[in-house]
Image (cartoon, rainbow, N blue to C red):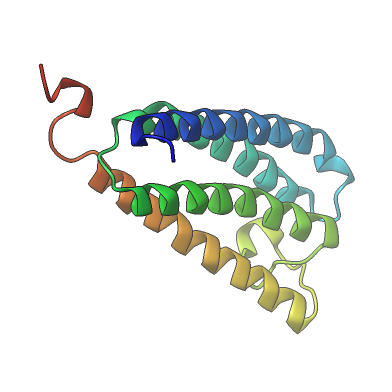
Length: 153
């Protein structure tokens, strides 16, 4: 088993890579916007990819400074990956299929799908919202107290 500092460093690097990838996927999504069934929702997906990619990059930079136990650290890591990628992918899928008006009326306008499609979009949005709220709270908790790097100084 790796010491916590090595594991934290490896996770930080994985967050940085995942953030860079999501940022690029968001940029490519921007190229697709005019071709999507719901372009305005496609623009939302483009922005979700770009901003969530930046969020993962920022999280990767902050990661070594968090004061978290292994379980909370692991939970935050996977919830952050799920929440950011699900946000981009859910809005992209809705834009491609021309659905999502029930849960994202400003972006999707009148583009609605079947009851099942709209329920799946809503379930994805609710689950990723819960994941990202949990990440925010865990990171806030992890930033409490003194900087771990300056504890002995």
